[in-house]
Each structure stands twice: as C-alpha cells, then as structure tokens.
Amino acid sequence: MAQTDTVRAWLMGLQQRIVDACVAVDGKPFLVDAWRKPPGEPLQGNGVTMIVEEGNVFERAGCGFSHVTGPRLPPSATQHRPELAGAPFEAMGVSLVFHPRNPYAPTVHMNVRMISATPAGGQPSFWFGGGMDLTPYYGFEEDAVHFHRSCRQAVGEHHHPAFKAWCDDYFCLKHRGEQRGVGGVFFDDFSEGGFDAGFALIQGVGDRFLEAYLPILQRRKDMPYGERERAFQLYRRGRYVEFNLVWDRGTHFGLQSGGRTESILLSMPPLVSWSYAQQPEPGTPEARLYTDFLVRKDWV
Image (cartoon, rainbow, N blue to C red; front, side, top):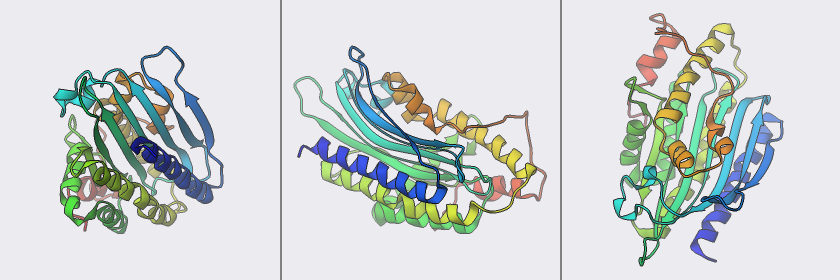
C-alpha cells in the first residue's frame, strides 16, 4: 500500500471512531455528507463531512475528512518552505471542532494532517501537522490538567515542551493580546525523522483525542446553568470566530486553495454575540477565566 493510501485509511478510520463515540454521548446521529470536487476546478479531491446540529449535548459538532490535490501550493503553506512555492501538492487530514450546548463544557479543536509536494524534477516532500486545544468558557483546574496530561502522552516527553509552547503561541488572538483558551499541543511543517516519524506523531494525537476530551465533557455536560452563563458563552464564542477567520492557517489554506467552503467553516459556532468593550465584574467566575485560565501556564 502506498504511503498516502496508508494515511488516508487511518484518517478515515479515525473520523469514524470519533463520531461513533460522540453519537454514543449525544444520542443524535451525525449527518454524513460525502462530497467530491467537480471536474474542471484547479483543486480536485473528495472528503466526508460529519456534523450534528441541535443535538442533546452538542449544539454543533463537526468532524471532517478531506483529501485534495492541486497544481500549486497556496502561500499559507509555503511560508516556511519557500523552495516548494508553486509545486503541485496533495493534502489530507481530519479536523474537528465541537461546541457543546452547556456553557460549562468547553469547546475543543483537533486536527491531524499530511501534506506532500513535488517540485519540478524533484522528489516528493512529506510533512505533517496537527494538535488539539481546549477552549473553556468557565475554567476548571482539573479539566485543564487532565487535557494537558493527555496531550503530553499524545506527543511524548521529547516533543511536549516545544509543542505546548507552540500551541500557546499559535492560538493567541494577537490583535487582542489574548489566549484563545488553555492551549494543548500544536505542531506544523513537521518532517523530522521522515515519513514514519511524522505519521506516528499524528497517530499519537488522533488516538489520544477521545480520552483527552470525553471525561471533561462527561463532567460538565449536565451542570445547571442560567441566562448569565449562556450570555457569556456566546460572547466568548466571538473570540473563536475572530481567531479562525483572522489567524488560522488551516482556514486560510482551505480558502486560498479553492477548498470546499462549507466544510472549511464547519468550525464556526452556531450562535455567537459581540458587545463593545465588555469587562467581567472582578471576583466573578467570568473574570477568573481571564486571570487564571487565559494565561500561559504549565498545567502539568
């Protein structure tokens, strides 16, 4: 089996495992939307978007697989590899974002991907990327510690310090000087050790995702809440939208390369609000999110 076929088979299996586990928690089946790019477009390929909206636990949860090829790498993919600018490429991955209904249950993001490019007259270059991060609206230390311990197990002791710091740097709303959440791990353009090492790394992340997130979701999904918590959740979701549209390289790569917009934007929350210069009252749980959780911290 070719290397790309091996990665594709594992990614599709990962998507199905995660969705099956989420259906068991939520009780509502995911919509399965298989798609294929129409002939004649520069970007060719196919994928499967699995999504649930207005579920019992998830207000919106999407998990997408895509596998595309294109005539030239978009700018967002070559900023660290200028020698591959203009090269034809192949990209595949699984990306998910889950937005639970309960404000005490955090939003989570996970992505694992492989990209290869072949410059004229050259050999294919493979590199891998991915990670997972947690975005609470109300902070709980035990949740953050559990998630970060799982992330360390996912990437190993050797990589964890660098990938944890990389996540903190990446998932930062630079226009606000504010972290998106409590972080996790993130890596991009990884080619150290060749194909086998890179593939093993994304397997570690993908295979650890459910044990990193589901215990947290189970603890928080049935906690009682009121209008105050709901209003704060919708306000903080606005930060999620800002990051994804302004800073996220994955979103930029998909849109710049002519990807399927509906699938690329499955990460968007279903409801969100903005208000001008909102500041939480000192001493409240909302204020504590900013002071104790939206900070760079060694949780493990």
